Length: 129
Image (cartoon, rainbow, N blue to C red; front, side):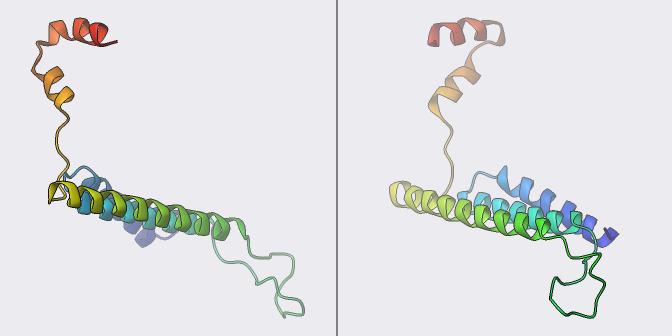
């Protein structure tokens, strides 16, 4: 695997993780899209160099055919990434219809637990159960 491909995959993962940690749903959707692209590039890079095409009568060496597993896994990653992107876009659209913006609000229960003294958190968690 070339160094440029490693840097590209690492950059896509870094940008994707940064975008996922944002509060805006549109950035979260873009972050998951970046992670999907990084997964596809990583899978194709892990497959190694391309082999000979598996065509009958080709003038290539039939002892080293191309490995179809990286391509199959990449197609699966593309389909999963596409489905996740559509699901997140539907959530973002619904959030926009309900609240008028795409920011993720803090959960009221999270705020209540964060406001409690750290020494008393065990009591709060046990009483909530």
